[in-house]
Image 1 (cartoon, rainbow, N blue to C red):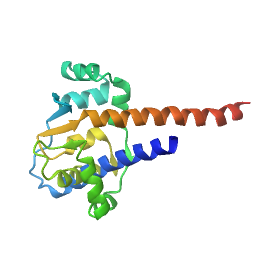
Image 2 (cartoon, rainbow, N blue to C red):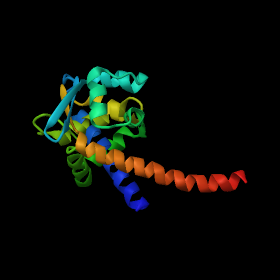
Image 3 (cartoon, rainbow, N blue to C red):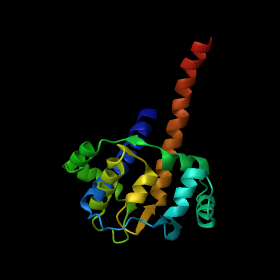
Image 4 (tube, rainbow, N blue to C red):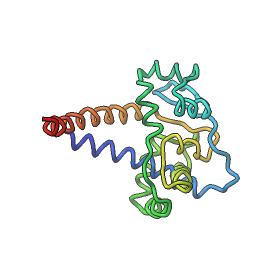
Length: 189
C-alpha cells in the first residue's frame, strides 16, 4: 500500500512538472504569463490572483479569496504552501527532450487534467513550455513557478484532483515518518 501511494504521488507530481515545462518553451516570448488562477471543484469555481498566491507562498498571508478557498476545501494552509514552494531539480535540456517523446507527451496530457487553459486546447504545449521556462533559469521547478510561467492569462486548476494528490502526499508523509522513526529510535538508544 505504501509503495503504491508513493508511486502514485511521484507519478502525479512528475506529470504535472513535465507538462508545464514543455509548454513554456513552445510559446513565443511575447506571450503573457498567467495573472489569475481559477480553481474548479465540481461545478464551483473560485479565482485567485497569481499575486495573491505568490504572497501566500512567500509569507503565508492569505487574501480573502484564497482564505475562502482554503476553508471551503478544508485544506491545511501550511501544507498547501509547502507544496507550492517544494522545488524539484530539473535539467532544462533533459526536460525538453523527455517531454518531446511519446511518454512525455502522455505525462503532459495527463497533467492537463490538473492544470489547463480555459479552452483546454494546446495544454500539452502550454505545460511543456511552462516547465521548461521554470527550469531554464536555475534548473529547479516549483508549482508556484509553474503557475507564474504558464503562458495564458488564466490558468484553471482542478481542485478535486489536486485534493486526491494532497491525500496521497499526506499518506506518504505519515507512512514515511513511521519508517524513519524506527531507525532513529535505534540510533538514539
